[in-house]
Length: 389
Ligand SMILES: *Cc1c(COP(=O)(O)O)cnc(C)c1O
Image (spheres, rainbow, N blue to C red):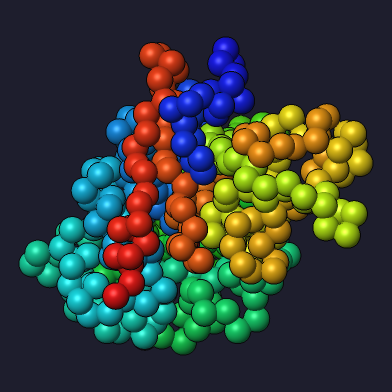
């Protein structure tokens, strides 16, 4: 990279807090995804749940054919701002949701046999544009954190092979595709083992399908991701079952493309313990730091004790647990210093909230061709007020 994001984050025109996405880093991910599409024949669509910064959609739409939505609002954003194919998978559709989506979407995946009984009559009906699919539960997932494991016992996600086997054959009338989503931040070896279960349990059915959607959770743009194996697996599916294969990552599209720029607004010692308060918040702006939980990286900072000055970085809400973590720095922090958290594009902007009325981070892009920071959005008091009444 020829530009220094730390210098860019310090520019006066960058407000804090601010999400800052580097278009050249996004371009690098898109090039990887384009290679995967070429080598495998898969179609990759963006899962809006993970990344929905729509000012970047014109750039992403040059490589990806469309989006997938988990709600009507996400689908509307896909139609309005991305274009191309809009797919939908919702845990459950209300009648009005289905009425809207079936006339506009490319694929609609239903989560349960009960939902399918409710909506089967729409398949092939006048005005229906959607091709329908079922979410299956292959009963195999390598996700170890229970809250993220879609195959955990008693899961509400997808239909098992045993439940499907008990159905009358007419149940499958109108079903064109199958969909599974059982991975999270994983490599293609996990996909390979997952597909063994999918094929063993649903292989017979796949011969009658037009498409298979392998969900998200493919960490394709990570340096150690085995893309050759992914291409091999997808080609195997396409050749064996003569169907279209879709992948719908969210995280992998925006992985390592964005930053959160924050300022130090107070610095004190509490009972001998050095604390810096930032104008951002784990709870309001980086909820995954508390929910996942994980520890973000800060450019130029080290592990606690690694550098001369170790400090606790606190958020600006009144939640006692709004602590981002502990890092060490070469120099003690002072009011006005800027800190740049890395990998803050995915599952950040889509999950923020206005808790405590804290200032919401602006949303900006760095455009390397002109060395410009484009501030797409600044949030005001009205944004806080207008989500309440
Ligand atoms: C969350 C989700 C995705 C995207 O997952 P990533 O981990 O962001 O790649 C795709 N499909 C479904 C059904 C999902 O729930």
